Image (cartoon, rainbow, N blue to C red; front, side):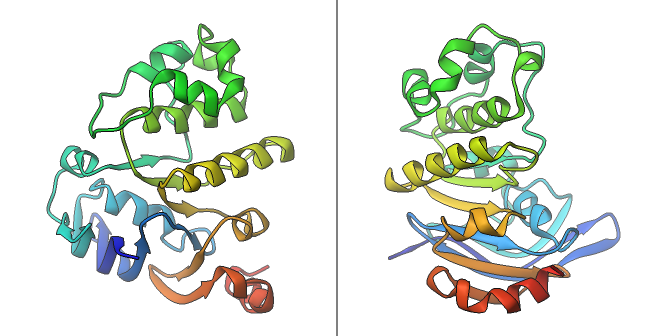
Length: 233
């Protein structure tokens, strides 16, 4: 299976402070891959660096073999990448419908609004509700639906289960499984190891801005003690 996203020797800085120290990993088309690590390890920063949202970065990021390390965020999005941030970025003064329609189509093949609503039936009854009226789970669904409408095929999801009730976490998990079945490629940053373990093909462990281990999905249970040591659990 061909590599869709390849990150090689990726470095990034906040001002003069270097926060990524040579990240190396790859994702093949149609995979779900997680970045696991303690808070502050560099997982979210890696997603931002991939999307061109860091002021300074170095190394190599390739999408389907094309180098994007020097590309602007808009051009990276046109390659079919999208970030769903932990804070979700919902426009509170706009309705669900307006939030879904706001981002421009940046790549071909984006889901229609009807397809998004089929994926997230909870939103069907809330189309005219303002963002402030949504629950945390509904906001997460809306954030995911919005990037699917843009045509993105490589989804960078930052802590999608943070602060959500168990029943909603299960629903988000089923959605990720459906997206994988549809051929989407997903890079998932997640603190909930139990959630990630049931979804991911592979796990990369991140410490101090670099990958220190790779764990295939089927081996996670056998290496759980090692992972807990990495995560400080």
